[in-house]
Length: 256
Length: 256
Image (cartoon, rainbow over all chains, first blue to last red; front, side, top):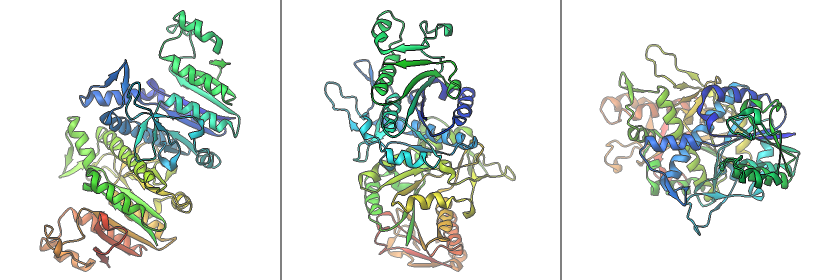
């Protein structure tokens, strides 16, 4: 089974958790890909630089300055992760969508809302030849949430979505397990209480759970990416804590 | 002839010059490697963040915060260069020394001066298998001035030195031309007057030229790297303007 792991947010900001995750990730057998976010690091850098985020309709816009900042933050994080994986004898290479034209995206149309330098992707955009070239040589691609437009511009692209489409594209070649790893044990009925872990969550349950307020609004895009992966050839999609990605004893399995 | 081009400083800060350089670089026939600096971008980022450079004995020290900043700046620049090369149909991949263990360096010993997170390298440290793997597939490695220690840390490493040792290592496999490209036409007798270009400069002339004040102190490490390359199997070492790297009509040829 080929494994695609997405990490984001909190774990990248906590040295101990990151260190423990990277050791656990390195111990996963077989072909594997790591996709990381970095929104918090970018936000902190913007704050330190005194740059106000541009918001439209409650969502962040990637203007030229923001693109510059996220490029530095994501690319820098990416290379730090690679250096730390090498120390764990995990041969890694840090890539964006621009490298070897791995993920050429479409800049999101400016209507109805102009989100700026944001790239939209689907599984047909993934250069699986490049990824399999590395995976067949036991090299672990570490993907930053940046794609490109082929016209010289990097584009800000959601890491959950990158993980999903990469898993879908690789799923055409081999069975793929996609893991969304974060700071919680999985999908929780009560987000403050890990004993309320939902071991199996069906797409049909999403509407009601969301309506009843059990699923945090921030989880919805992640879940949609997850279900989309299952509907497009990914064998298994899980949500679990970062230190569980090799054992998978405690987790939420998603079903369609 | 395999070409290794080093660019730095000014060209990375000037959109027009960079654009023109990248088009010219893309038109170089045959295998090629691009090595870039980024000191100015890092310094600007540090300044905007209100971080004072740490200096010891007149030289900059890479403390932990500085390493963090240069990692972001160099890695970000690196990926921007890759995206711009892709737009010129030049298949590129952005790498640090950590990626695929391309350049494992030795952290500089703390005595007599502790320069912090700085990596020293020599040609035996270059993973030529990885580089030739890309070059044989017509992929252009774009190298950021970061190496790693194999223990999880990136290290700040001089880009002129990286260009020199990479050229030396590849020179064991194929004839290599090393080009130090910058904002001037070459080595100038009078640094303000391009008509005083020195077409050929011999290592033996260095002492007197330096003593007479014709060679700027900042050029000395670059020249030492250049001569070191010639002494270690690099076929040809040139200094020229960034927009000359494909034609090489105006240049300084270095000789030993």
